[in-house]
Length: 225
Ligand code: SAM
Image (cartoon, rainbow, N blue to C red; front, side, top):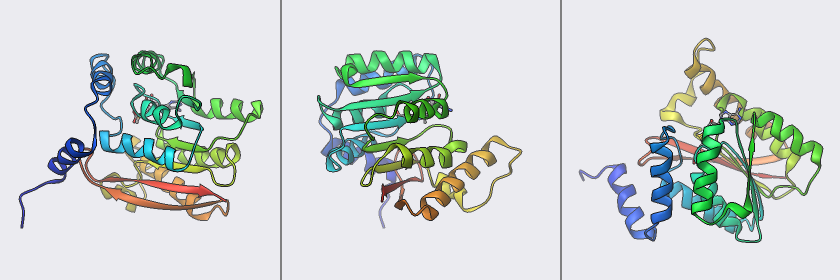
């Protein structure tokens, strides 16, 4: 038996696997000082997103849920200087903090922050009929996960990757939530998203449970067929 716990293991892994990142730490600090909630991905998850972007060879990424631009920065690093990240955020304050953080990390040239409800932004992107996106990171209002996944399938191409965050929620995903509460609607949104990933023939997905500084949660990863 060991007295180790997942948080200590996360710290150990960060120490071993992450180069010191003063810019990334400053970005988190700026977001917290501006009063943004502490709901960004962990350091290990952020680096995972960067590596996944690189493994997929993704050059065009669409993120739903910017917050202070923490995950956005990792994705922007992943696409490299020739790549592009479009990120959706409806809180102007979050978008402002994110813009500052992206500039401080030197990746602002490859990121566009679209301010507004993400469903509207995705509709506009469909209407603009641009190049398909290679990778999607869905991390906003979970109530709309199913819509975001459906729209991602339309905005992607065969081979594009869809990542959906927070699909386990301390196990809450197992039970239908009370639609009269925020928490219930949220978990029902997560469940509907998983249903789409499992039933839409255009996507093939898996999900991994995670522990660590963010508690017990998980993410789904799918590929568009
Ligand atoms: N991906 C970020 C990271 O890891 O650094 C965290 C994103 S945070 C969990 C979710 C963000 O989505 C919040 O900033 C919130 O304001 C935004 N959001 C929620 N609902 C939205 C919507 N319908 N349209 C656009 N943004 C939304």
